[in-house]
Length: 133
Image 1 (cartoon, one colour):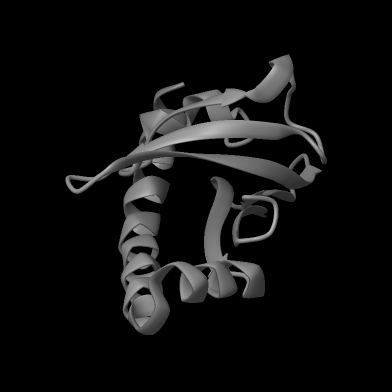
Image 2: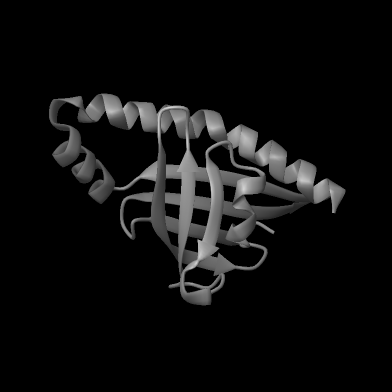
């Protein structure tokens, strides 16, 4: 379910839609585009799948080297525990330093906080959708 990025807009508080570039699919090396929106702005990003091991992990890196999103899966008594992680990578921090200069630390902190707050919202929505299917 999580590896079908075309469904990401169903549960993410920021992502509105995703599509596979060139008709690709969920395998390592595949690229997809995502459209995101907040009250302040709307933007698109391209991401590359870096892990796609069924039942273990699905992960992608935004911009190929800027931010890593990961979903890991572990069996539990009544289903599967899903853990979502997010981290700025060195190239992402460098990009923010170049783009925002002295404001980069504030921008990085703001994006980090948005991810921290969005993760539980996303996981709850995934659970709700999974339980309904």
